[in-house]
Image (cartoon, helix red, strand yellow):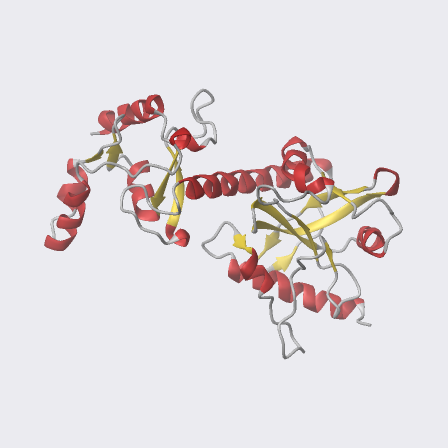
Length: 312
């Protein structure tokens, strides 16, 4: 049996490994999570989580390391309430988020591990699914209330600073602020995954098929309350450089889906091969999504194209 100090070393190694994995990324596929991490004193990789359990304690630790909620693939059975309700619970929350127990026995070993984490104020990892087998890791997460009569716990979030674990926020104001940051991260990740899936993980302009190099660009920015909703018809999968150019109005997309190139971009890219690459985009039509219902909304394209014209 490990000691609390051993647990702390493993926990710190897990957090540091996630810091590295998340550099330049917003989500982790389950395969990367399942690959595990190295920790001091071990000559093999330890596990972040388990396919079988949402409440995970590695055999090398005395307490919980991670919590997980999943998004079932279409047609799969929903085993726990939080599988269907986790995102709704997150967005409806004020300062803490509900997490459902496993099963209906609050005294089961897994659920008692949650109580221990609450008593010790142990920092955990919360893997929240935003698509089937795709997760946003939220850490450090703390169990702040253990409610056996409701078969659920309440979670609160802190932040990390220069690789060090920060303590649980002491008051509701700090918890609300951190939760708002988490909601934004999850919102952006869900939107990205939905848009990229709709287009088969290809850039709508170039066809680039490298998912790690793609963003989900809002056609109308999400700050627009009337038109900026996080819906697939308001999104386009673009490579990171094309996303930046679209946001800067260096390229535009007209209501019919044709790409326009600004004179500024052409003037700044005078070298032969570079200019040729830019010229090949001019007048091309964006690639459509797999389903007609996911096509870019023409009215939104028109509204965004007005901004492009005004800037050029």
